[in-house]
Every structure is written in structure tokens, then in C-alpha cells.
Image 1: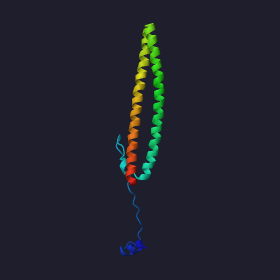
Image 2: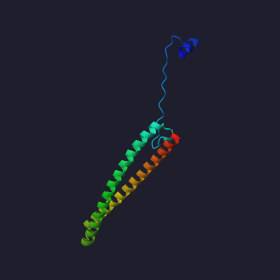
Image 3: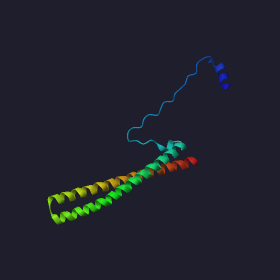
Image 4: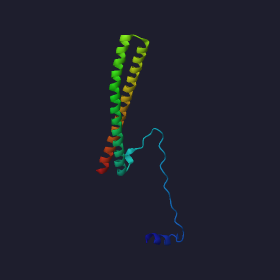
Length: 135
């Protein structure tokens, strides 16, 4: 009713209403994370659930990497023993390859640990934001 009264006063009776579309936010530059402190509470809970799933998957991946690391340590020890006993260029190459694989797995484990730490710090930020919004 108030709209009709306003339309009568402002001489807009009979004109078609115009719909306005709010523009989408600008895309984020590559490598830049969105500011999580401006997300509504519902989005925070959804993001926390997704983040929890990502942390669980990262921990599963870390567990697999650690199993591979233990196996590769045994492979390196066996290759080292064969290298010392046989003293052939082939056994030295096998030992070097096994050692390189072990170093690759160590780097992969460090990377997985860093990813988990980053995800946990993001989770802490979201939880802090959720607590502040509820108070």
C-alpha cells in the first residue's frame, strides 16, 4: 500500500518497474585467499565442515607417505648392504636411486606436514571468527 501511495505522489503510476542486478564481486587474484572474516555464519559452518574433510584427507595422505617412508628405509638399508658386499657400479647406482627416493619421500612428508599445519591454522581462524560472531 505504501508503494502505491508513493507511486501516486511521485508520478510513477503506469511505469514498468526496473529490476536492478547487483554485480558479482571481482575475482580474486591468483594466489590470494578470500578474507574469511567477512563470511556469514552459515558460510563459516560450511567452510569448517569442508576444512575438516580436507584435514582428514591430508592426515590420511600423511599416513600413507609415512608407511612408504618406512618401507623405503628398508630398501635403502638393503641396497647399502648389497653395495658394500658386491662393490659393483650397478649396486652403487641401486643404492643411490633408493637413497634419492627416500629423500623425495622425506620432502613429500615435510610438505604434507606443512599443508596440515596450514589447514589447522585456517581452521583456528574460522573457529575464532565463529566465536566472535556468536558473542
